[in-house]
Length: 370
Image (cartoon, rainbow, N blue to C red):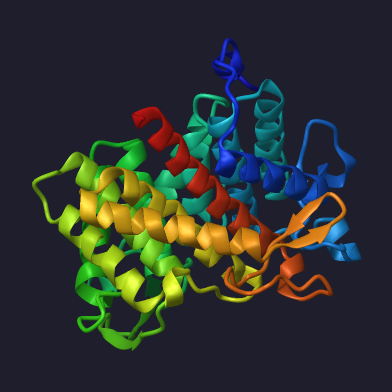
């Protein structure tokens, strides 16, 4: 299945930096606790969604498709940080496990879910042949666009809700992958729809989404501000800025970084959103802040880098100690609770791993520049 193990051959040996070493510790802990064969099948892996696992978790009756997409993304982060043929095999096995558990389909009814898997598969394209999967996913995302509510794609098929969590990752994927020539234009339209329909004019932060009435108009707007929404909107702007430097995207990305610092980072540390799906939200924001730190002009880039590093530092300082490695909390600024609760969700642990990989990425770029 793998064809990119060649990338690991001849990789220069070098001592990991502080953040790279911490990310490696997180990787070992999370893989050791959560990564298992799907139904005992050889050549497969899937992430157990909670530890200690209940029967439904061990049997993967509960498996959370989009959490697995972020597990895959984290493994690719780790491979880019420290290439290893063994990890390429695990990446291929996880992709196979997702496909089998999803009954040999690449998509489900949630447009945000499939956009996340598409983003991870696109990053894995030099390691595994992901072209058929990407073609199926991008086709579904294109079909999700309608003019109801002023544009955008739906949160899920057959629903009446459109939101940033679906349109943000879909815009990033379509701008990057460009499976069809019109994909970048659709990505641009998604970002424009988010800007026009869901930006809080007072804070500059993105609201969650809007409900569409039967006549296609907007029934109401959900004005909750999640770290997730800021991350994916920022990611879309940064991606589009790389293709259209003269467009509005750099300014919008910079504005979003400033808004995050002012509204979602008390004492300079990004806030969390408990467990379950919310456990992933802050890690997602760190991923795209790291992108912004590398690709934005100096002032906002430095702010983005500072938010990533300060949040990762708080996460690490507040980790709990368990056999096999650290346990991270959903609020980076608070000590992890070893007794139970959201700390034992795979989502929360992946969020912590993402933050450490984001800091390691910035560390690596700084080392290369030096």
